[in-house]
Length: 169
Ligand code: FES
Ligand code: FES
Image (cartoon, rainbow, N blue to C red; front, side, top):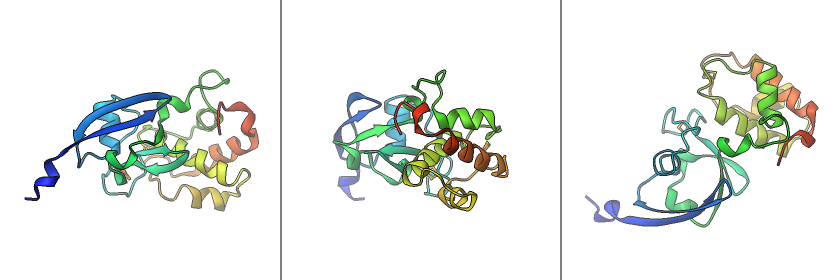
């Protein structure tokens, strides 16, 4: 076995506006770092193999699948998870979350944190997407419950709401 695989590393990064420093095994994935070391369990693990998008977070302002990133690779970066996305001026929900609520864009909710962050990324890239563009924008995120129709409707509604409802887009 490669002895380097057991090496601990110090990971120093900003998560949801807080500076966090932890010593973890070098092989620790960012998703496990967030959930197990920081207790941010809103970021889910659906597959661990880059398929489902349940682990999506914002890394330096860009949505990424946090099971594809080593915690050590994220050192020095800024991470935002679903726990921080809800801080807004709209009753505790940002415009995307509000739209998911209004359009029933979830059932079990397992995919929802990742979906919300994927839609936020989509709307940053394309503020007024067509339905086809919405479907393309979330095609890295799997949902086993909804059939996607209501998720697309939620993304459309969030786009129509414009950026003013959210704390940060
Ligand atoms: S847990 Fe990361 S893509 Fe599924
Ligand atoms: S709401 Fe259940 S997986 Fe999407």
